[in-house]
Image: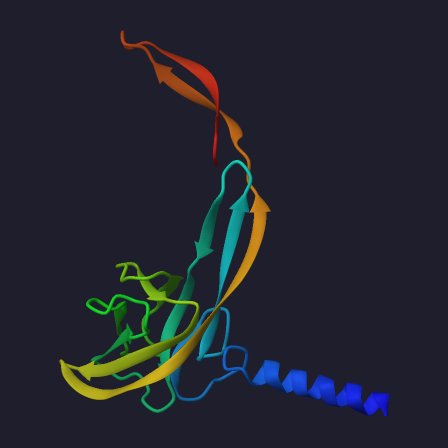
Length: 185
């Protein structure tokens, strides 16, 4: 009897974990494919939290592409992705506008965590993000829709202390000398 209870409990936990949208391998419909995953409905962003004399956070943006199995790329197509999620700037939501003219996906872009539009990165929040897409040709709408995109953060921590570096200092008369200082890397 204990065996069956343990088996049932294990199968329930497994079902819950693998049916959560952020962990399933979705490959159908519209979404964002990263260079490290075939899951088009979610991504894991790497982050390092530094402790010690030089605390801070470093995030590693992910290279990504818009994909759609319903509307493949075609000459003259462009796709605009807008993150419509709550907690982001309602006046200027994060977006990216990319070529969607050849191959099987859009031109690449980088995804990063944040709260407002940043020119180089397509900004997302941890958790569920509501994405709106518009595919156009010559500024005429071809297709549009929305999809949910799930973002998890793989966070690790490291100790980072100051390191000794040789620094050139200058005197008021223009001469210089070398000295050693402790600085954060």
